[in-house]
Image (tube, rainbow, N blue to C red; front, side, top):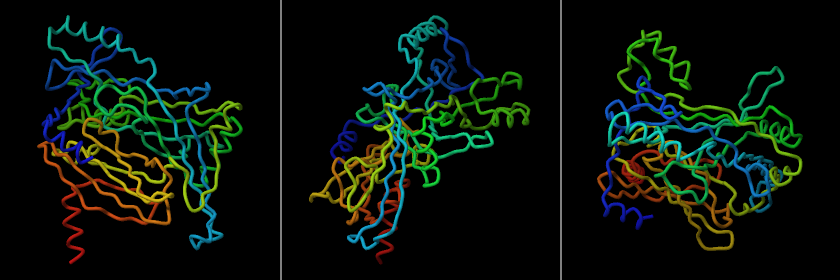
Length: 380
């Protein structure tokens, strides 16, 4: 990571241009809705596509429901103890994504407003995911909340993403309920998602506030204020939907897995979750990229390393699951540190932090310099 970061420093880093989409300047262009940038009139944004569950090679949905049961062992000195950890994973893809459609829209914008027009996807500030099921009384209940992360092998940042992974952790009660629904092929289980973006939403007149897909609660607040434009852009929902989750009988055995954990976990089991809210919550204007380096003892000896990267070009990615390339020894602690690349090109490296807990998530939010100073003060 250090070499990669130093290369970025030597090349020089571009300053992030703050996008200011204005929904009072929305229009239909070549069959798609675009909004104009409030401060850059030749820049336009299209709204994100709906998404769908990707299809695996066997024709079934690309998802997995995993229940790991730990019953304790003599090795750990907790024989007889029983814990359950469950997770839901799905690969999602953009539905009806047609680059030629956007090219036609860009060409039409050039005809309307002249050369120099730029059309890009509206910057997403947050992506939410929930696993929802229908209660006995017909109401919707949340079984788990989770996050989106880059799909394995997918390019980082840059071009519009085509696929992403969704990861949700479930408590024991909801895990048993969801497992029952999936095993029986019952309807009513859905993956609910929402794309959020920071944008101006108020028009000059209250009656013009009609942007489709915007959070109704937010529009209600604006209407109560007489439709006045807020002093700052607000975070709004620009795309939301729910995907039904059902597994055909012939695919259930390969999608629903229950196994027992003992002294080690199998390779690629998501034992850790890494959070970084610096970009999602716009906490650091000086931060370009942050990498979290995790080192653990391999079950067969030696050290295995994992890298989780967060960047300002994808602020909606605030969490990453850890999938070590090799099985790790959970009887030993792991260590982690954060490495920051600033927009000025400076590289800042945090101190190693050791942890013996394989259950608690890692929160890498904040300035690594402050962590180092705090740790030095605690040692005094």
